Length: 399
Image (cartoon, rainbow, N blue to C red):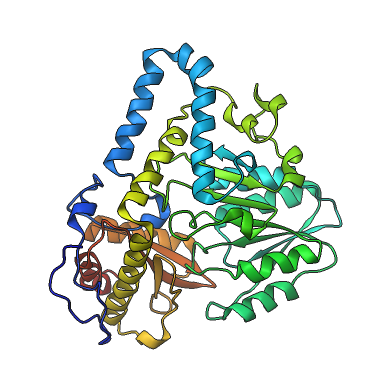
């Protein structure tokens, strides 16, 4: 990896990646060079070779739409699904292509059997759109929606104990994040999933951030339902995500849009929900091959260490104690707490995020959790230490 001279990370710790750059890999992304892009976690970023692959599929579609949709597309989707399933270590017949994780969550909640005496349990780290979906479907069925508070600094045994302690006799479904969106923490699924299954409670894992960031083994996880995006850390085109279902649930899962594919059943029913552009799904395998070509272990280590180093840099600029920072040592996103009162709700977070983007040309996520605001820093191969130094220099004046 080409590098500048190694330097000392903020806080005095020697970090072999702080001060390093990866220009030959960063050049794969056609990102605006005058902007510091520190929010890969929200929408991802698609490398140029993957965009070219998607465009080649679009050209093929437009050359002869009838041939493409009626005679070529089914086999092409089957091939793409097989490659994605292999990457996720999932059974090919267990995953369906969906546009995004949000639609996958609504699909599960719409098909899950709930009655007036049942409840669904979420943690207070759940993604907002998933919470909205859970609210809709519990209200429609008369079920109850419960939320359990999980402290941000809780260790894995405490998290597991807290979640299991919130399960009641009427709990039918628990929704758990593999990596939480507002707080960038992993949930101890290896402990929680089997414990919940032993209690007869179904588990929906929101793995939106997991593919690409983590080494995912969906079958070994053993959840009833697992959803993951390919457009985030897999760097596939937006509009590509997957829904995995254990065999006992597949007959209950139908696309939210009823169309010609419905009689075929899961998963291929999800391939045909009316005319749409399927090229994001078809180009997803190219993104997986690109990441594997870079080296997934190397990429993951680079991203985690750069995110942690960036966290230290920005935290130092805000006068924060490095030893008290929330951190997950395997996640490519890290939090920097904002001063008390700077951000207290979603509207204030969105306003600050927009102000940073417009005035400093730095795109970074601002999140809220438990009434506290955070800057959520992402790190991807196209990032360099200078991006985080730039945010550290500008953020205090923007608060």
